[in-house]
Structure formats: structure tokens, C-alpha cells
Length: 295
Length: 275
Image (tube, rainbow over all chains, first blue to last red; front, top):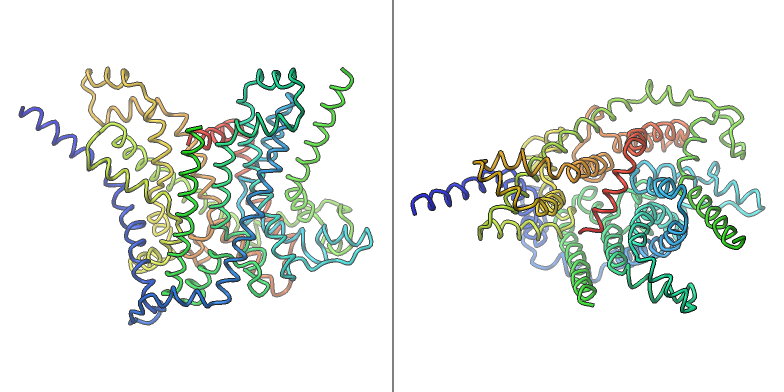
């Protein structure tokens, strides 16, 4: 009995000792900031002044009438939609091609995957020079075929298009890698059976391939959605959220509010709104995955 | 037969074209970096001569080497710290079945869903109150744990066979000996993948470190490059120099990919598939 209690105590002590290096930073850099952000979001604190007032839900209420906030929400929606769906569709196409060849397959995957590995900040600079209005290759080509050069990063719509292209390019690297490896695990017998049944390529895609890799599709969908919501680096380098806010997303707006305008109170409220959106997406992920596993 | 060959041929052509699009930004970066300055506006895509002068300028006129050194040594320190924390806590979560331990795990699970941005303001104030703003120590401190690493290692620690652990326990192995002689050697592939992923993450990280690090001698590659890129924006960016600097900054990634592309690709694929 005594030995058992001793062992129990010893296990607890070991557990505490081994967990402390994790729990202390977790408390300092995750749990405390989370609570603190929540509390600051009900104040009008501006970081510089030593005093602040409690303003209740004023910061949250202000978002409702704020035109810029609505614009930012719309931008986030557009940016997220056009950066999540295209990489998955193009990725599916490339993955079906890749799984039909044997030689050089890994080489192709590695080449395309490098996009995902390179720092977004660095590669965004390269894209700036690709879309540059005088020296960039896109405008050079436009001039050669007799079209007017476009000031890509200067126009509201074109700037958004460029930011989307850069993001899609980067996501494609991962989409191709993951979809290729998911498809490689499919049973070749099932495909043969479909061919013997006289099934077409389309039937194969919608009846066999897509259902079989649906967990991966859901996973990519959620991963890219969350990544797009958190996108900052490429927007900062390419457009700084401009022109006139045309490429500002929620997270970018948060950064400007918090670290350029020092509107700490409203910025914290925005962070909480952002958190709720992310939790909502995670909840969808959870339920859809459950559903898929059951089927 | 002829038809099948044609299909394969079309596949390869499509893939080569797509690969070309995917690596085009790198090619463009290289082309601009070796272009003589007076040809920049000439409208020709290929330079008449390859001029590597800009690469020399990257090392003499900018602090690129310092940025590289900062990124690499801070990255290595963060890998060590995060890995040790993750190994210890993953071990506890897998082997010690107590109510409060499970509660801790649920707590960590809950934080995994949170976007890091929500912690930025208080963490920033905290680090500035500790007088650690603009120091590497402050940054490393704020990146002390990786919740992802804890999950990832827990996942692979679970797969260590019970019999092996039991045999070691009968031999009188304590917790530390179990960790270092059973769990770590058994999961060395997972740990190697984690090291690679953590390094890539640290090297590419921008937003949070850019808030903390302001002095030039403390800058990491991503922050230093942005500064180089933006500081000239008033006079028009010196694209050849900027592109040469970008190329240099991608070098560690390319070396990594060249040396261990199989491992990176496999671990990336497994990482996401097993989650």
C-alpha cells in the first residue's frame, strides 16, 4: 500500500516536472494573452496612454456601422474563396496526371512543392518584380502582343487578382503533393473494374476517385481556408492592403489597427471577432470529418 | 499501343509546362539578378550577358550574411527548445494516465484551434515589459513551445509498442531512461521530420518577429530582406540587387530540399495524412 502511494506520488511529481517547460510558456504566451485580449476589447485603450475607460461592447458595436470593416469582410471572403477552390481543382488535375506516369514523378512533385517551402515574404518580392509596370514580364508580354500595359498593383481589382495569384501559386505546391499521395494510395483494381464496366473518365472521377479522397479534400479545404484568413505576408509585400484598402483582409486590418494606429481596444475586439470566425471554421471541419468517417 | 504512348507523351508535356509555371518565379528572380542595369528597361527578357556583380553587392553592401546567421542560429535554438518541451510533454501525455494530465492535454488541444494573432497584443506588451523587445531572447521565449509539435510527437509516441516499454520497465528503467533509450530512438524519423518542419517554419516566419525585432543587427532573413526591398522604394527599388538577395536567401531552403527532398516530401505527406 505504502509502495503504491509512493509510486503514485512519484508519477505525479515526474509528470509535473516534465510538463512545466510546456505549461509555463503555455500560460504566459497563450492563455494569459487570450484572456487579456478579451478584457482589452471592452476598453478604449490606445497603448500609449496610461489610462483607459471601460466602454462595454462599444468596440464591437462600432464594427457594425463601419464601412471599412464591411469592405474588409468582403475582401476576406473574396480572397479566401478564390485562394481555396482553384488550388484544389488544379491540384486534382495535376495529381491525376502525375499518377499516370512513373518516371520522374518524384522530380515533378519536388519541383512543384518548392513553392510551398519558400518564404512568402521573399517570393512575394519576386512577384512584385514580375508584375512591375515597366520591367515586369507580364507587361512586357502585353506590349509584345500589342496590348496596353497594366499597372497591376495600382488598380483595386488587379491588385486583388495579383494577391490571389501569388497565394494560389504557393498553395498549389502543397495541394499537388498531398493530392498525389492520397491518390497513389487508391486501389488500382477498382479503377480496372470501372474500365471493364465501360465507365468514362468523368464517372471515374466523381464516383470513385473523389469519394475515396474526400477526407483529404476536406482537410485541404479547411487548411487553406484558415491559412487564407491568416494571410498577411504576401499582402504586406505586394500591396500593403491597398490601393485604398482593396486588398485589406481581417488580419491585415487587425495589424494596422494594433501596430500602426495603436488602437489597442478596437484591435482586440477585432481579434476576438477573428477568433470566432476561425472557431466556426474549425467546428465545420470537426462535424464534416465526423460525417465522412461515419460514411 | 500507339495511343497509349501518345497519352503518356501528352501527360509529360502537360507536367513539364506546369512545372515551368511553378518554377517560373525562381527563373525570373535569377534572370533579373544577373541582368546588367541598362538592360532592365530594354524590354528583352533574356539578358545579353550574365553579370554576377549583384551577388557580390549582396554580401558587401547589405548585411545579408548577418541576417542569414541570425535566422539559422535562432532557428536551431528554437528547434532544440521546442523539441525538448514537446518530447517531455508528449511522453507524459502518452504514459501517465492521470485525470489532471488529461485535463492539461485538453487545454493544449483547445489552444491548438486559436489563431496566433489573438495573442499578439498582450504578448508584445509582456515582452516589452520584460525589456526583451528587439532581442533574440524575447523572440525565442515567445516561441518556446509549439503546440503542433506536441501533437505530432504524441501521435508517434502512441505507436511505440507496449511490450518494448514494459520490458524496459522490468529492467528498472525510470522515466528519463525510457524517454532517451526507448521513445526517442524509436521515433527518430518523426523527430527528424519535426526538425525539418520547425526549421522551415522559423525561417519563413515574418509577422510576429517583425513586430519584435527592429534593430538591423538583430534582423532575420525575411525581415532584413523586406527592409532592403522597401527602403529603396522611394527611389524605385533596385530590383537586380533585391532579386540577388532573394536568391541568396532561398539558398538554405534549396540546399535542404536538394539534400533531403525525399524525407521532406514524405514527412509532409504523412504529416497531413495522419492527422
